[in-house]
Length: 455
Image (cartoon, rainbow, N blue to C red; front, side, top):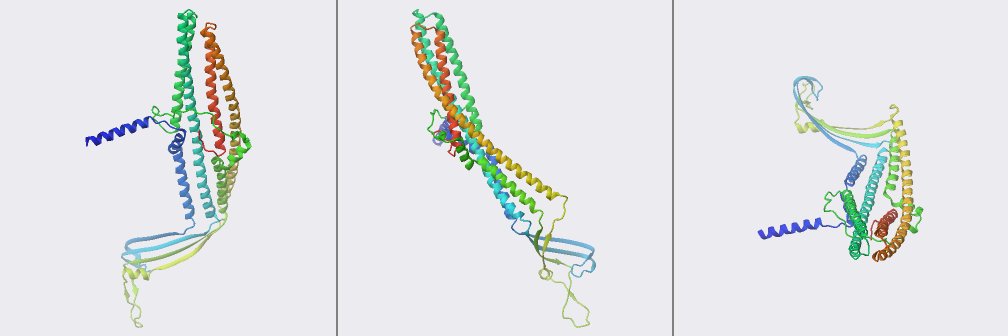
């Protein structure tokens, strides 16, 4: 028994350690964020509610059916339910019935309500998927920000490692009298500045990880981390397409555009429903009822002529058959005047249709602007990244030349530190422009219908 408990505790400890040391990939982050986002759960409830409303609309085509029964007891003056004569006694009565009604015509409102409910369900599906799309983009952006900050931290640490070697070398040069003591102080100041940059870079990594964790609804910030990986510019031919081509493609499948278009169709169905209130309604009904009373008296048939009438009291079952009956009919209702309520509702529905159409056009314009802006940004960052790489290559050559001069005492420490700082800035700019460019490429591909992936 003790052995089994030990094994269970060991497995639990190992599982906990693995959970704490988990390194999240982009795909895992996206899937987890979509599955655990609170807004997604709320929109899913809205979708379920729309599906229930669709069932309600379907039920409008079905007849209503209800059963009723009642029991009453009366003492004193009352009317006998079978003879309709006054009586002064105690009587017990039971009534029962079944009623059904069906709508035959109501200005086509039931048909429009059914179509409206179907469109509303579809609209809620688009709305839910649009939210998921936004979450995927936000997660990808935050994930790349973490990776970018990690790379900057690695650059800062690598630069500090080089400075440590320079510091060691400078101490040797000072000891041999090749360079003055002041040069050593300058290098030490540079090392201290780089240590501060490392601290700042670590802070940026932590802040970006917390932002990503919050987006994923994860509260264990201390144990949350992304996979230790860096990315190069992925192969993509998305920029070979024009912004208009990408925009036209986005119009076909973007869920926000589909939702906006479905909202117009829902508003148009609401207008048809409002107009249906101007038309007459026609319904049919049928009712079956029966009763029982303990004071019921029924004349005896077949008595000789002139003989006094005789009565008998039927039992409960017999009364249900004797006193049952059926009623049925149709009802026509013609609207004439209701204080302009129907007309005003129609006008409101027309306004809602126009508002939905304007929103649809505005959403298309916003999408076109987004596509154009991201396209321009992608082109800009592509050139900026290319220029940053060229600058870095030149800065490294200049640094190497400066280092050779500094090592032999032909350059002072201040100028050497400036050369190194320019390399630091160039490397940071390469990292920044690279991930800015990658993210814009991914957004354009997403608009073009390509799922988000860094592979």
